[in-house]
Length: 269
Length: 261
Image 1: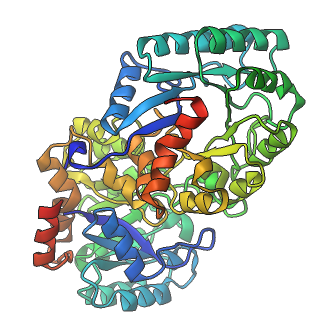
Image 2 (image 1 turned 135 degrees about the vertical axis):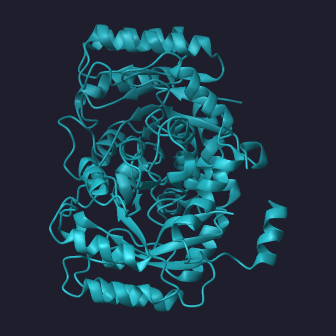
Image 3 (image 1 turned 90 degrees about the horizontal axis):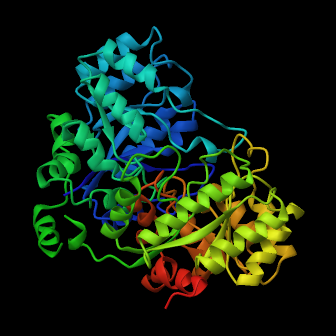
């Protein structure tokens, strides 16, 4: 069983996705061995009004047992608090994602304390997108740097009660996050280098490492294949692929395929 | 789930460094062990090309190739050497080094990095060597958002090179760094292949290249050790192309190009 904590659906102006419907995306993820996924609206990254994009995503994913929405929230917008409360009342919505470098604010800015408090109260997962693209591969006129690792660490230390999932961190950044804090979690989507995942697990416990593909920006099979390192224990694999995110989600059930189908696939696999 | 529980397709990695930059003891062997774990049966080693900077002198080029020769000798049949050259070096040295690596040591290709743009006539001696020994030239290429480094080649430079030397096999490195536009740049040159490694596993590009160039002009490359084999293989394994096309990209095309039976 693999839960993808880092998937996207929607329009991205620099590269049209072939997986542009919930059906295509879930089929694509399933073909890579992924059972269910937390999905964010790609349109919301470059949109001043992310809530329309969130609504579109929520509507598209309604009834899906494989794809669950993670909504994008911008703490600079006047109605973020109201929106956060609204989303927290929707059982389908599993969490919120923030993109400070795309939306033009610092994690250390004055509006973050209240935001972090409200997120904590909401019970929603909090995801921080460290980067979306390799800086070298962005549109030259639209370069957005990753969120600085030092800023993220300082941010995490200021809010020890919040658990923050950092998406698309590099192996080096992830190592620093896990070493320097207790409340930062990382996904594996952007980790590279020889022996990357076993190397990370040799230094840190698996409890704060999550499976993430960053599909369809990245190939989902690449993340799935990283879990094939024989030095990852069965226990750690289970934590990374599903148990950790389920624990983080608390009462918000991460949807899984119908048990019958799931069992059949596990036997076949 | 372990690799033995998954059907792996045997692969030739056309673009590996095995060691790169500052290395620790045993780094090469750890890299090669990961290759084996993921079904990579042949690894083309470019050498530690970054260790002396962008524009290495002759003695530095020789040192890089010496180290690579030693690696290939330690792993015969598994590691296949590519001769690293700097087109800005003296033509007599380039000829001598090409002869030493390819004729004497059996290296399978030539590797060019960022010392001279591929469109520069300084590449003539290198290309003469490639023609003489019938080996491919792997040229690093990118379209970088912040602009390429001084002499770093773009796919457009590779297209110029291909137009000047029809018949010589050229491998354009870093498919994702070259992007859709880079693939289009070399589309009309049938002797140019694209290599898939050296960037995050960006989705959709293998499918695009297969549609525009045909799978017969795509080669699997990892660019390890900066990257990892599962990430880089995943873009082929997970691509929406036929299994036959995947096998071509992972093995057949490289085997044909390098004369491996």
